[in-house]
Structures are given as C-alpha cells and as structure tokens.
Image 1 (tube, rainbow, N blue to C red):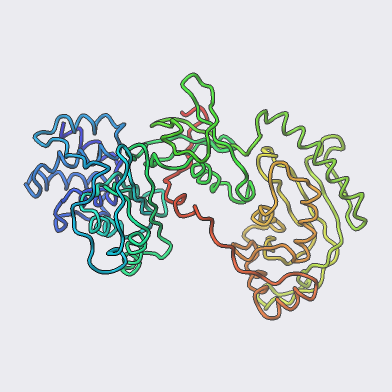
Image 2 (cartoon, one colour):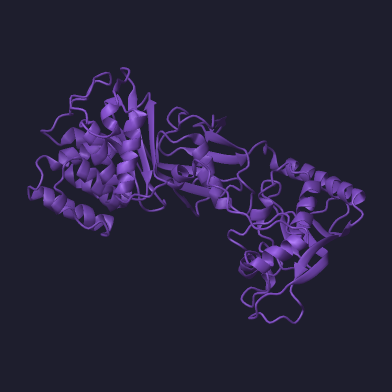
Length: 492
C-alpha cells in the first residue's frame, strides 16, 4: 500500500507547500524537509526516501492518517490508513475536556478562562493568510497542545492559504487577539484572519468540485474546505466575471442531484451541511434567471421601453439609431453633458490639457448573454475619461470602450435602463467614475493632479475618492483554488 500512497501524493493532490505544513504537524524533523519548490513528484519521492531511511518512526502511517483526515473521501488514503501498521488511531480528546497544559503566565491570554466545548462538537480555528502557516500551528499548540490539523489548503490557484486546527476547548477573544498579534509581529500580513467556529462535523477537504458560471463556463475547484459557506463558492466564481456582470449581483446556487435535477442551496450553509460531496456539480446564477430565452426576449422589450421613456423625459437626450425597431439590441444615443476631451492635435507625449466637450455620442449593445451579463458600452465621440479607452496604437479598435467596472455600480439583471442612461450622463460629467484599474491611465493620473481636480470641479464633477474597503469575505474567498476549464457543460 506504500506504493499507492506515494503515487497518490505524487499526483499533486497535496502540493509541497501543503505537504510541508502537514509533515511539520506530525513531527517530521524540520531539518530534513525538502525544498517546497520541487515538483510534487520529486518532493514526495524524497519524503519517501527519508522515511525509509528512518528519519521518522512510523512516518508513513502518521502521514497516511494526516492526509486521510484532510481527504476522508479519498479511497487510497483510507486504504493506506488501514494497511499501514502498527500505528493505531490516536486517541481523540473529549470535546468537553479541559486542556491539561498550564495556562500562559503572561500577556492577555493568561487572563482567559477556557470554556469547555459540548460533547460531539468540533471547536475549530481557521487561519487565512499567505504566509506563516507553520507559525500559526505553533502558536495554537502553545495554548492547546492537543490541537490537531484538520486540513491545509494552500498554493496553486489561490492567492492565500487556509489552515484549520481542532481545539479541545474554545479560545477566548483575548487569546485569539494574542495569536493574531504574535503572528503579525512575526511578519504575517496584518489583514490575516483567525476565525473560530464550532462545527457539528469534523472539517475536511473536498478533492474536486465542478461549478458552472452564469454563462455555463465550467470551473474546477480543488481542496475545498467542507466548512466553506455556499455563498463563498458563488463569490469565487463571479470574481471571474468582473467587468461583465456588475458588482456581485444577488445569486443562487443549485446543486445537481444524481437523477439530473437541481436543488437550490441556502447560501449561508456550509458545503457539508448543504449535502455537497466530492465530485459534485454546482451552478451559479444571478437570481431569477430561469428560462433564459424567454427572459432575454422580455428583457429586450423592457429595455426598449426604458430607453424611450428616458428619451421622452429628457430633452437633451435622444436615441439616434437602433438595429431593429421591434427587438433592438443596439442603441446609438446622443446627449448633452459637460465633459472633457483632448484637443484634436494634442501630442500623445505632452502633459494632457483637456478642453470641454458638451455633446456625446455613445453606443449601447446587449450581448448574447444579456440580461445575465451587463450590456457593453462604447463612446463614439471624443472623450477624455479614466474609465473610457483612449487612443492606443496597439489596440485601435478598442478606443472608446467603457470599463464596465463603472457600470458595475448599478448593473443587475432587472436594471431600469433609464438609470443606465443617467449613469452615462453622470459619467461624462465626472460625477461617476473610478480611478482604480483605469481604462485610460493618463486620464486617471491627470484627475489626481491639482489641475485635474480643479477642472473636474469646475465642470460640476466630483474629485477622485479613495478606493472602498474590500468586502469582509474577500480574503477567505481568495483562498479558494478555482480555475476555469475547457470542459463542456456536461462535465466532460
């Protein structure tokens, strides 16, 4: 069974970064750990050589138990645990049992009184950060020597990593703050997360999940914690649609059943509680998008009414042209708004000195996946704006393209297009725009200058503002290892 165990590890299911943390947690001598930059094949080959050389007693059995704890659904890891003797299952401490180690004698943690967990529950500490995972284990075991590794998910396909440790008792807020403080003092990123929860199951990793995005693009997720909220899966998928769907619309997640039907999941539930298991398929949709063909036709007719209603009530706004009078998907519009443009013969290398531009022609077209995805917008008339593509010899056809990150402030599948038209008017007048990730870096840099701020205010616009804070769940969502795949929607 040893051969099968190492072959499974060499497949890369557990990469060397994760492997080092697992090995440290079971007592593998730190001085013998191979370089984590090795490929999975060579890394685990070297670990096998070292264990067979005797650097760790019962090393293979302990390793098998550790990886089986992470991936209880993996048949190879389970068979390895059953076959590799003489190690038996380590005794599990009672969840209601107090820790036997002495409490710290200094610092805030010394004032904390441990609270016993209820029998049958699993107090769990999750650490989310890009570094210092081994240090986290050491810090927790300083407080609770019998803390065990539930799982580690780190490395390829994720910006940060997650580690979950068991606890024999719940830590106080003072103790959590002390762990966080010590890790930051050791060099960890200040935005690290230390999350304590009590679960009714032993946390583990799902080896693989297939998730279909709103346009049926399949995504593969690897090493997904069973405690991941369903809403985090939706957020991880929608992050790949940035600039196409607007700012995180309300979503639903469906779970494909064995008979081919779909069950709607509660976004607040964990994957385990929702009944999601290894190899299952999920689908993420904006809310209320069933019957896409019919929905699209209804949306196209609704947009036509919205656009005409807005034009009739705003004398400085007109619809110049449509591709089809009955079911239009392309609109050319013209409106009056005090904006900016560069002089006709301005040198591209000179410092920008824009002039006023009062008349604007804009093209709006509804893509094939509308209303699941936001409409596309392009400026046809000259314009100087951070979120509108300027002249670029490398991409001549892209001039005038509008960064949909701006439209994301308001887009949703049921958006009133009168609001969209007003958004474009406000955008032209610098009342709605973003400096972050600009389509026109020159305009963005100019807007931040003293001259730029003054001119923007002079035309009735708003000066640039700081970026909004990141969503609370951003770090944990970024720890999910998700990759688009070329597989078809049927999972092939």
